[in-house]
Amino acid sequence: MTRTHVPVLAGELIDLTQPAPGETAVDCTFGAGGHARLVAERIGPTGTLVCIDRDPAAEERFEELAREVACETRFLRMDYADGLELLSEEELRADLVYLDLGISSMQVDARERGFSYSYDAPLDMRMDPGQELDAREVVGTWDERQLEQLFRRYGEEPNARRIAREIVRRREAAPITTTAELVAAIEAALPAAVRRRFGGGHPAKRVFQAVRIAVNAELDSLDRALPLAWGLLRNEGRFAAISFHSLEDRRVKRFLADRARGCICPPDFPVCVCGREPEAELLTGRAVAPTPGEVADNPRAKSGRLRAARKLDTEDRG
Ligand SMILES: C[S@@+](CC[C@H](N)C(=O)[O-])C[C@H]1O[C@@H](n2cnc3c(N)ncnc32)[C@H](O)[C@@H]1O
Image (cartoon, rainbow, N blue to C red; front, side, top):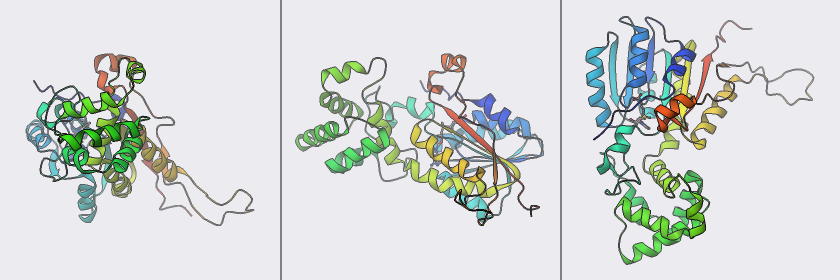
């Protein structure tokens, strides 16, 4: 059975970003709408909530939410980077833009979609079932070097080379078309001592993450989206992002730190020549992690990290 998605760090997101009556908010990763519902309640009947997701299953959930909340709502079924671009072409001004990255429990638990190493299913992993590239193509056609780099870069997998070699060896005999076949290749590539070290974790976790990121071009979307999201915000608008691995969190952290930095002149310059002023106030010093209580209730929240910032009014300076 497909469980619904439990929103991660939801109270913290609301406390930090303080959605207020009448505001306009953009939820870039609607999922099951857990965060969106809380935001809709705060912005009330005079507010506007624009929701984006590339998964048609999320659009169905949105239809339910739209009937139940009082604010004006709109859904864009597309990559959030494309959605943000569209909204900026329309000159939408937002008070709040947020992303809750990665995949939803609905996607993981829909066995046939092939996101999970725990169920045997066709290798798919597409968030948007209409897109061409799927996990079968990545695993079946990328050469050994590409696979090794993929597992190393996007999975931070120390045994990337061994796993890539084993996948290529196996697929020469017969194509790898299912999650169970991929898991078997990963397990066979790892020496017994390495496999034992995984303890509670699954040895296929990093490779599955890497393949999913590649199939859905997740980091490209995030890189494109960050400046677009920031550009939509009015002065005093708030931005928030919840990441689930260091590749995402590092990007969000750098992006916000860059906006919060003032003068970038070399330290030995007697006066500032760059004239650069901070555009952001960081609302989170370190990334906010879920409480032990939240993780106990929802183990999938464990790696969630929230960062938020407020856009400063730079117009009257000077
Ligand atoms: C972690 S879930 C969001 C859960 C949601 N906040 C909730 O409370 O139910 C992430 C969602 O973002 C969507 N998503 C991820 N990357 C996307 C992208 N580049 N463009 C559009 N949607 C994306 C996924 O399809 C998934 O539904």
